[in-house]
Length: 236
Image 1: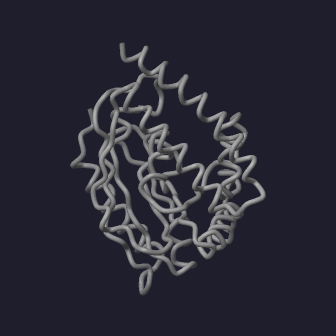
Image 2: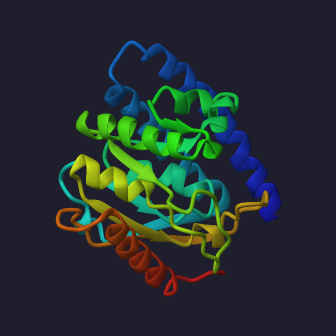
Image 3: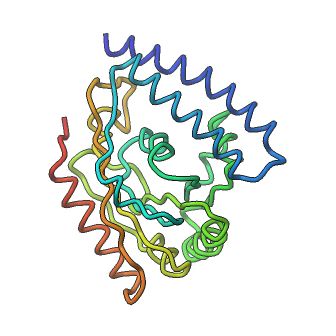
């Protein structure tokens, strides 16, 4: 039954994504902030449809920790769910992501119109410079930056290496870091078609001030908060 409901979800997801990509294309001459509002509408519908079709919902803890101005969000990465849900939690935003994601029909095309920082993971220092230079421009334009410091999705209960690039960007741009933990992988696995019913918890941690701290210190502080909070979230 879960498989059938997941299939119904994906049919709806595909249809609405095609429609919204067309809308985004029509909005291409307008600033990224306007296109972002359209993308927020898309994510809101997708999350609503996920609740209707798969009985999978979410709740947010720590909204009071979200600062008023742009910041760098360092978040756990377990599934595709958080890339959708972040749009409903934080203000106008864009992401650091793999360039190959932009090649995905419709979904990737829509992402490309939100001015992401699309990197080649194998580019090393060049990719890091790209994150800092382009990310700083996005932040100064008023957009938040969403970064998954582990770089790739990890299964519940697992932990990857936290790259320091996101913290370096925040330090360079003079903005705070907001750590985020969640247990989406327990319901929307990184590899698997079926979605499990339940309630995903997304926890927003206290803002980390980048002043008077090195990027490495900021990164360690974000990692410590995320991993300690992850230990308290259900994994099944």
